[in-house]
Length: 252
Image 1 (tube, rainbow, N blue to C red):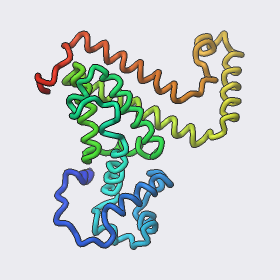
Image 2 (image 1 turned 90 degrees about the horizontal axis):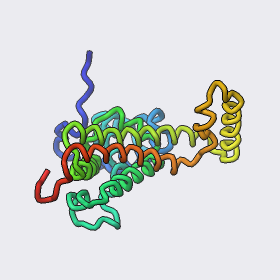
Image 3 (image 1 turned 60 degrees about the vertical axis):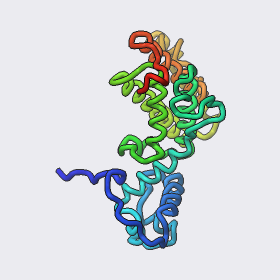
């Protein structure tokens, strides 16, 4: 079975080429094309047309289509701020050590959701390639540091970070699909009412769904916040059975 090509971040890029287009222009155009057509509509031919260039000319700057997707994905990762106005420290370690570690994580994950809503193709790409670009790694470092300083390490740390990432990716992927299909608020409300009425008519068969499902509830922001709180509550319970939070002087 042929092996997949190594990610661009793991290959020698060779000497810089004399600019004609530029990798930056290619990446900017790639993000625009992905925003317009999604990952399924992306091709090097369409990208070249957007740049008014020949398809083969792109390969002077990148080896494969996958390289372009990796670079575009890392470019939009920069939209998640590394530092925010209410950070009270000058370093990543100090900010992560702040007692409001949950606030930090909620802020980061909420920004991630906003970026994924602006660029709906992100969840599909993050599940198919390693996030090894400099922007992605810088944000992962901050995130891992926050959870580690709160008191988790090893498999628990990896599981906690993974759970939070999977939650946000899955939530936004579903949200984006729903919003692209149902963009009429009144129509959505009517559909939800009809669905709730359908279940209520069969309360004997679906008693819990009838009383608890709340199908008329359509506030994605509140649903995201509630779900994230449940996960963070679960993570916080683990802090009480592992070890006390570290101080900066104790190191990683």
